Length: 179
Image (tube, rainbow, N blue to C red; front, side, top):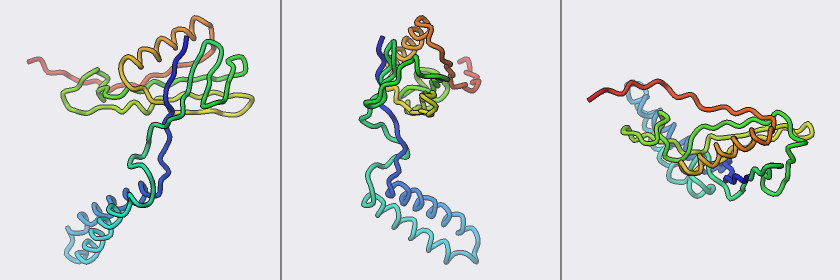
């Protein structure tokens, strides 16, 4: 048994923060235009927001809050490997997996969606204690086949009698009209 996935990290780039601040300033400008006494502030916020959005690409790499990295995590029948660090199941406690979604999965849990809303497969994570140290990582599931490999890995861990818990995302109830 083997399962591999790319890890996900939060983009700590200054450019992302500047860009998001610019978007916030722009929308605050819209809010301030509703009041006649604050039109000058609104104009300032529009201009400041626009400048922040335009200069943000020069202050760092990446444009998303979270991004898939080149780092890999692998789960084998006897250990978990994160980057180049090995964690034997015999030394791991409180192992927990959380399956949220895979890339292009509907936000309602179906495989396709008429609404056009999709998940990006980056909210899956696992965590455990290793020699008293807490290890938690988010990982990317790229498609339905990759999700099935993950679920097969979970079944194999059960068969190997590895002590772990698994949680799944709860989806909202959705009424599908009969046409």
